[in-house]
Length: 93
Image 1 (cartoon, rainbow, N blue to C red):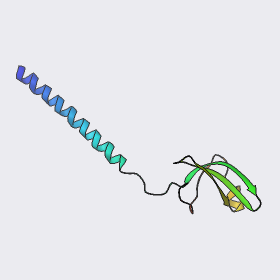
Image 2: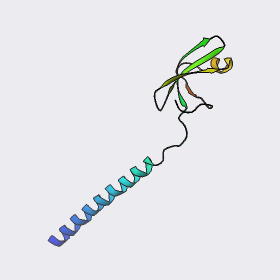
Image 3: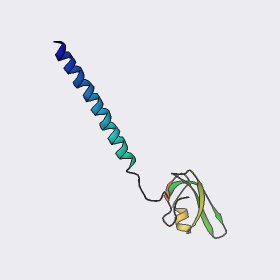
Image 4: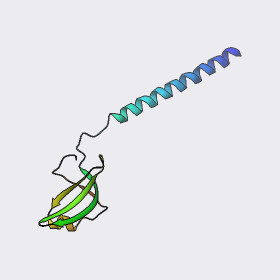
């Protein structure tokens, strides 16, 4: 009887250790799946016109930095404060 209880206890401990190791491996594998693409998207924080520059100020979703970009009038008219926007010809800022 004591041997059975000891055996069941050992199996339970082994299952717990195995489960913890498996969770650790899964967590590590998700960390290594980061994108290598530049982070050039964000939320439009402000907009305006300076001379011939129709600008959108975009807050980068990765860094939180804001930067102004000039666009054609049609791009400027079709995008609004609060919209998500990606700048394709620009790296991270």
